[in-house]
Image (cartoon, rainbow, N blue to C red):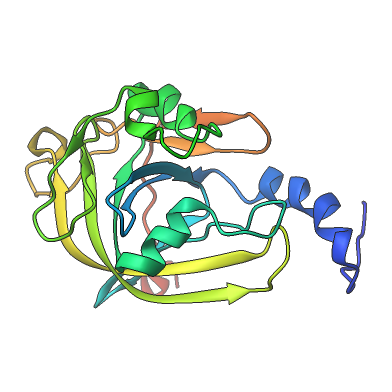
Length: 210
């Protein structure tokens, strides 16, 4: 068993990060659409992503600072406009979602580079991703910064304003059938996974077990 004590060394995160993303998984992928104050479109994938509150509905994703310590375009845009959209990444979108992580020139939209299609949202200026089966329109609630140097995370919390769900995903109870929404999870390095064999487990009733 390898045991690692975490200390204050600034460069230590470079050794720990690959380990964390290797066991904290599978992680859902947020394909985040944002718009700069100047009207420039940005689309980028983030796998530090989850829902953190049901009432009120709040989602979170965490973009890290670049190796030079500067904020990524997504973080900068959200600071400027207070709005964003999260699209769900499914198996047929995975390749194009990863393409959105490429370091394209500032004047190039990741929508154009990946071949994905921006579609007007209902309540926010940032566009939906037409090809995604689920899109979440969000307004910024809070940004919590963890550090200032390269690799430091910024937890972006968004209030859900509008939820777009493809009708074909819903079962008779109005819930999403995981067999119809083939989501993709992020593992470590270049590894990804799909939901191929979902199964159900019930939480036990202690009184019945007695």
